[in-house]
Image (cartoon, rainbow, N blue to C red; front, side, top):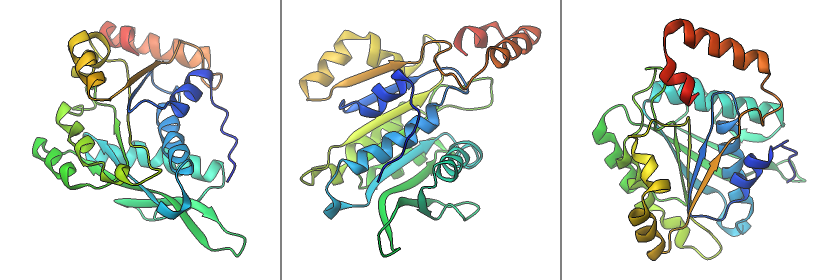
Length: 243
């Protein structure tokens, strides 16, 4: 299976990362969700065919935000790159399979995405029972008051990556997000030496990937200037600094 996704240098570094815990941060429209999707697919392709499909938990603050953002981006990428899939044709799928067609035309699932909306804080407990090889958390830092964010409890999914115990399956956790404010829980995984050292001592490597402003050629300067002007008019200088 070969897909020519035109990744920027930062996107490619994130997709190819071998770290256990990966943070991918950048402003809106810079391809964070698309990169997260292709990172899941690349991860599945590195695994032996005998263990396909590779199961991933995809987590966001609410089911509604998953439906109108993450799922729509995945649909767009599947259509754009003519990737075979099952389940995306449904209006509100809670699980979809991504794969390829064999020479005989049969669908071969490589990747199985299970979607979790954390509409209530206790919903994070449901992740403890998920047996997969990957966990993907989308937008844990709220932006523009349109998202409640994802609590650190969502990392409970990491404790259930049992499929990662199968030979040839490397567990991976990824967090795709807007740049957070300085008090957000994700910052300690970059800035707190005690947390980083404790994780490393347990064999958990952490990768941080920040998208440089203007790296994505698909986002025009006009788009960035227009968004900045609107935020300035709203008096949301906090969001200008982040987004």
